[in-house]
Structure formats: C-alpha cells, structure tokens
Length: 367
Length: 254
View (cartoon, one colour):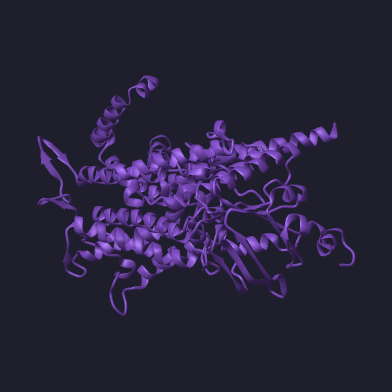
C-alpha cells in the first residue's frame, strides 16, 4: 500500500490533503471536541519545533531559551489586540509584526553569543529565556506593561472578513466550536513554515548553515560570513516562534508568564531531538507524538477510576516517567532520532564505525 | 610578473612568545612558491595570519596591493585567496559533492527570499553550482566519488577534495598547508602533477611542505622559516645550498 502510494506521489498528496482537511471532524466526532483542541496545540508545537529546528538542527546552535520568542510573539499580540492598551489591530497586521519583533530579539540574543559554542551558548540562551519570563512576570510596575503574574486576558480572537473565530458556529445542525477554525488557520501557517524550512534546507543558505554546523573555521574559509548566517538562523527561528506565540495568544484569549517556562523550551527541544534533528518529517513526528501522548495518557486516569474506583497513579506523573523512558530508549536504539536526516544518520553511523574499527584493532593486537 | 601577495614585516605574538618575527616575503603571480622550515617554525601561523584566521600583531599583508590583514577570513576568500588546512577540515558528514558546492558560496548570491521562492534565477544559479562542483571533482580526479561521504574517502582523496573545495571559491592564489603529508611516493607524484596543472590553469600556489624533494622539484622560489624568522629566500637550488638552511634542518653552527 505504501509502496503503491510512493509510486503515485500525486495521489498520496491528494489523500494527505483530504486527511488533513477532515482530521478535526474525524477527531471531533470520533473522540470528542477536546481532541480538536489537542490538534490545534499539535500544530502550534509543530510550528515551534520547525522554528527551533532552524537554529538547532540546521545551524547547530543549541538554544535552550527558545520559548522566549514564543512569549514575545504572544505578548506583542496581546498589546496590539486587547483592551490592555485599547488597541484592536486585525490579526493579519499583528502576526507579521509579532514575527518581526521576535526576529529582532533573535538577533539581539544572537549578537552577543556569536563567539560562544555548545554548552556555553546553551547556558546563555537558557538565561535569556528565563529573563524574558521574569520580565513578563514583573513588568506590571511602575508602568503596567504585562499585567504581571495575572497575565493578560480578553485578547481579540482572530477574525476574518467580519467572521470571528471566537464563537461557536451553528450550521447545518452542527455546532462547530472555535477550535475547528483555528485548526485550519494553524494548518495554513504550519504548512507555510514547512515549505519555507524545506526550501531553505536545500539551498545555498541551508548548505552554509550545515557547513557552519560541521566546521565553523572551514566554513569561513569557504567565504561564508559565519556571523551573518548565524544571526540569520537566530532571526528566522525566532520569527517562527513569534508567529506561533501570536497564534497562541489569539487562540487562548489569555496569556500569562506561566505558559512560557523553561520546561516548554525543553519540551520543544525534546520534540526535535526525539523526532530527528535537522529532518523536517522527523521534527513533525516528534511534535505530534510529544503533544498527543500526554493527552492520551489522561485516559489512564479515567481507566483507574472505572476499574479501581480511585486514581492510584496520577497520569501527569506518569507522563514525566514515560518521557524519561522514551528519551533513554531513544538514545539506546535510535540515537539519531525516530526519523533522522540523511546527514545525522551518517554522523551516528560514522561514530559507530570508528568505534568498531578501534575495537577490532584492539582484538587484532591481542591475537 | 607582478606581485600577487606581499607579506611585510609581519609579527605575531601569543602572549610573550613571538611565533613570527618581522617576516616578509612576496609571491608573484603565476609561480609556485614554497614555504619550508622545521616543525614549529611558524609556517602555519603565517598562513593563519595571511588568511584572516589570526590578527597580526604588527605588519601588513597585501593582496593585489590592497591590505587584507584586518579583513575577516570570508572577505579574504572573496578577494581570491583560498586555502586548505594541515589537519584536513572537510565537512565530514556531507558528500564530496556537497563539500565542493559549499565552496561556491563566495561566488553565488541567492538569499533567503530567493531560496524560498526558488525563482528562475535561483534555480539557474543552483544548477550552475552543481555543475561547477562536478567539474572540479573531475578536475582533481574524484569524478566517480561525488556521492560518497567526505569522511569515507581515503586520506589522499580527502586532500584532493579539500583542494577542489578551495578551487570552488575561484582563487587567484591558493595556499596549501602540507598537501602531501602522509602520502606515499606515488600519491605525492600525482599531487605534484595536479599542482602543475593548477599553475597552468592560472592559479598561483603557495605551498607549505616538509618534503624537500617535492618542494625542490616543484617550486620556483622558496622561503625558509626557522623560529619565526625568515632565514632564506630565493630559487630552490640556491636555498638548498644555503648554510643557514642546512644548519636549521640538520642542527649545528650557522
């Protein structure tokens, strides 16, 4: 079946399009409307993971504060489209501004960290992520910018040609909650992001990023302006994050610093590591799995209640445990991720090869 | 003949240690110029100073008459001065072809917008990059190995690939840091032929080498470094007989 689809890419493409279009209805009517909401979050995380993948997967710059850009995009949306400042700009104005705003901060973070590599870069970006969150938490005085820990609410929903995404639509005897409309909006942006990321990967820019990741000195010796290209990676990744943040703010209608903790940064990083760093299908798979599985685990609580009468193991504890097990298992069995890129696969394969060779020569020496 | 590269009174200090002390030399366009000297003499340091990897403590490096010692490595490459590395620095997990394609970066222009929209101009440029990279692989004798991973190539082929990658930047001057180190005599001879072919193709070569026999047979002129100073410069035959050079290599009174 898969083989015959591979031979007919157009058919496969059409089937995928139909599936993506019907997915919220399948999930909504099959499993309940809460699953449509889960789908929306899956798409947001795919968008985030694709953005982070540009920084970490393509250019090889380990960024542990990525969620800060998500926060910046979300807060910018709230500033420009909520009663907080009395501004109510339309989403198609706010989202690009949010993406550009986050991109600018990407450059601001990138510029002083250009000389740092590996662990040192990770620590600085981690600090940056926390700084943004703490700012959001405290910028309610002397001038109330973020409303502090209470967060900002009553953020305008997305509205297209007078039709607000914020209300449930009753049509043909069906009632469609906002999650359905956001699904298609998020899907459009996610597909756009995938398109951009794929095109960039296979281009002069993508090759330059890969070269920097492999060997920065050699990359510079090939005429690559490593400073500009690293800043470009930071800016591109950050603007994807900012876009996702704006969508998140409009979707939730409420944001607070709690949504932008270090844990979220680590979660997004886990998605790309688990799925396969640098490879877009892998990154998507990672984001889908790590968003869906915790939701599916909620049923374990219901199951316990039904069979035992009370909850013995809290599913949210179980979630962390399974996360750890999954990551350890992955490191053991698929160190390059579930769907690794060609290049990553080679890297890990090459290391294995060297190790085997060394061992072989040791045994030879003994014999 | 005109002077392509001139190094003028270059000094490089690391803390108190002077790795290079007032070294001057000039490479003329079209020649093969050899840089020799015992281990630790400062040859690679001089290379790094010329190609922008190190900033010189004092002195000037001129390429085609323009000072380049304050420029960044990628700017120097764009001015037509490429190099290879003593400890091969390929992009190990990219294919041979991809390695050379990266080398075309300096001579191509596609930006983010072009890459995303993939307009006709970008597609044409991309096709040109691929075509030129394949040509260069053929030129250095790696025609059949374009798809293999760089790290899977034999040692000699990796050296060749590094040269192809450097050539992709369209250099007027190519600096090779010990390009035949670790090769057998047969491979050395083949590399020597490649260097002559390069010169005939209009590339000026600057060569760091330990193999005195190769240097003497190949180079038009040679400079000798010892303890960070230039102790001799001139046609290969003269330098070979220079007592200071013999002393530096064999020890003893100069």
